[in-house]
Length: 208
Image (cartoon, rainbow, N blue to C red; front, side):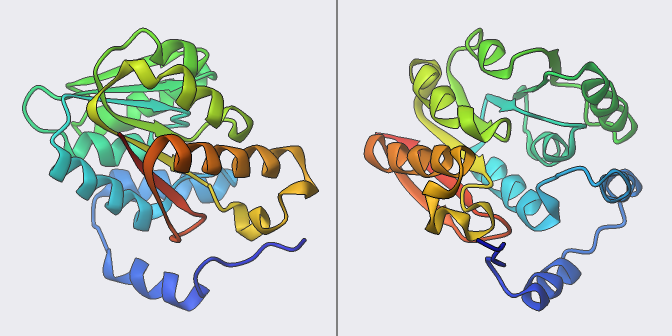
């Protein structure tokens, strides 16, 4: 099955044009992602994460699969007071880049940088107010299930890439797509959940 554009490319382009930001660090991160063909959430989803964080006012945000810190940039920018952000990635070079970018943007003050298995790292943290999943898609369900007791009472779980270019319409085509479909169904069953059809699909859920 071919990739499906969740939204019309021209609509995405229009929305992106409205979100112009002259932050040189943000632009540098986007340019690096394009150069390396490195997957990032993009500015449209990034701005959504920023707004959710500003509204939620979390004391603790934990990311699993932070890459070089692009989504972390948006979370860190929206943190208030003593709110903490944990970035995790299994590649040390990614976390080092994330640290450098956030330091350059003066957003590293309340950020904890972790290298290793993101699910195992997240298990060390309690009362997580926002859990962001953007690691191996085959492990999304595992992460959500394993970390249920680590979430605060009204915690949000946010997961990227849950429509996977529309391939979830035929989940039997690959193990990865089947795992994403199973995760979506698991979240619908166990959490108050919606899927926002932006970019590649963003799942937003809250503990019941």
